Length: 613
Image (cartoon, rainbow, N blue to C red; front, side, top):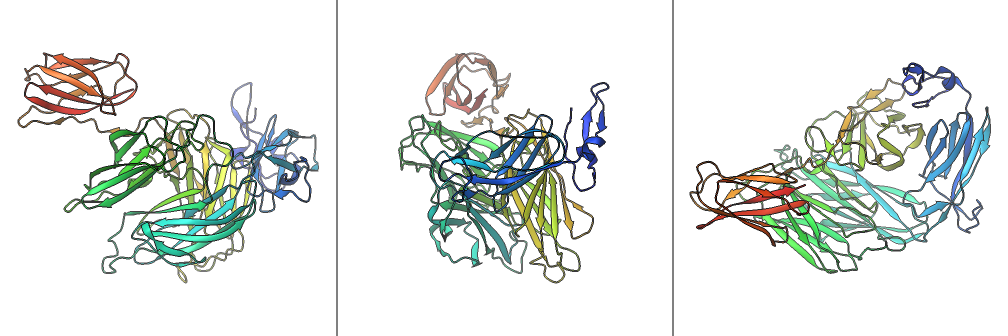
C-alpha cells in the first residue's frame, strides 16, 4: 500500500519523504526504491471546451488554461494543471488511470469517462473535451500586494479571467479603497475617485479562457516626521468585476434575495447596513452577529424586501467591529457576507489593531476579492502567510473553510536574480483538485508534481535590494480548500522553499491552522441595571444544552422574576423564584442566543445573554 508515490528528476532521483510504502507484515514504513526507479509513461494532451457539441476536439473548440486535471489509478494519483494553451502532461507509473478534469465553477461536464492503461514505458496522447451545461460568461478577479507602507507608493496587482462558457462583453472592475488610500498611477486608465473612494477600470470584451493583469500604485500618506503613525493599522481594498451574478438556472427553493453588508464610521458611532440587493423578497428571517475585536457581543435578525435595508449602530469605542450575516436558504453561492471596520473611535478612545485578518474576508463568489493589508515596518522578506490568520494562538478556522496563501520573496543579494523558483509541498489535509492560482507580482510557469507546486519565474531578472529596493520584491498567491469535513483538532501546516538562481533554498516560516468549532468567545456578562444592586448574577454553565443555574449570591434574599426573550424580542419564558439560586430547564428551545432579565418588585436588576447549544 503506497502512502504516496511522487518521484522527481531524471535517472531515478528519489525524494525520500515521498517514496514510502507500508509493509503489511510488520506495518513499518519502508523506502520503495524499485517504484522510484521505475521507468514512467508520458501522457499528454489538451483540454477543450466543446463548441459544436459533438464531444470531439475540433478546430472550433476552445482550449481551457489553468484547469486542474487528475490521473486517478488503482495505486497512484497524480495531479497537474493545463498551461496557457490548454495543454497538460503526466509522467505515470504503470497502472490503469481515469483522467478527470476539474473545471473552476462546474458549468461544464466531461463528454465521457477517459481511461487509459500503461503496462511499461510508453507515450500516449489524449485530448479531453468538456461540454457546456450553461451558456454564459463567468468572471473572476483577485487583488493583492506584498506589503503596505506609509509615506511611500505601494504596488497593488489585479488579475482577472473569464472561466465561463461564453464571451463576456463590456467588462469592467470596480475598485473600492479605504478612504485613506489613493491611486497615484496605474497600468490601465481609470475613472475616479467617485463616491466611497470608488475607481472604475474598463477592460472591454473577454473571450472564454482570456485572462489579464495590471498594476497600480497606491499611496498611504502620513506625516513624514512620524512615519510610524499608521504602523499596525489594516487597510482594505475591495474588487468587483462586472458583469457578475448567478450563471444558469436559479437553485430550487431560493427566494431570489441577496444580502450585502457595508459599514462606516460617523461621529461617535459605528454603523452597519444590511441590504437586500437581490431581485426577490426574503421569505424567512435570517440572523446576523457582531464581533467586537474577537468577542461576539450582539446578535439580531432581519427579513428584507428587495431593495430594503436595515441599519444597526454601536458606540465607537475604538474596537474593531465585524458583522457576519446569513444568506437565504439555497442561495447559489451559499456565502456568509461579512464586513469589518477598524479605527473608528470617539474622542478619547484608543484604537485596537490586528483583528481584521483573523477572520475570513468576504470574497465568495470569485467575482469578488477583498484584500486587507496591515502596515508593516521591517519584516522577513521571504515568508509565507495563510489567510484567514485564524482565531487565537491556535489559529482556529472552521471546517471546510478555504485558505488563501501568499508567498513573498525579495532579492537581498548583490546582483539581479535571473530566475526564481518557489516549491510548495501541499499538506495532505488540503484538496489538490480545488487549487486555484491567484494574482502574482511577476509572470510564472506553474508545474504540479504530485502534491508539489512549482512556480518557475523564468527570466525574472529581479533587481537586488541594494540597487533598487522598491523593485526587489515579489509574491505569488493561491487559494485551496480543505478536504471535506476534517476532524476537529486537525492541524494544517505549510512551508515553502524559495530558490534564487542556483543557490540553496530559503525555507519560509511554517504557517499553521487548527480546525475548531465554537471558538469565538461570546460576551455573556450580565449587567446590573439598578443603582446599589448586588454584583452581577452568575450563570453557569453558559453555553448549555439542558439546564443552567442563575445565582444571585448567598446574601440576596428577594423574590425575583426571570424573563427570557428570543432574538426577535419575543417573550418565550417567565418564571417566579423565591431563592437566590434557581435553575432554568431547556424544554424545547432551539439552539441560539437568548436574552434574559431578572426583576424584583423594584424593577429590573440584571440583564444578559444565555446561549443554548
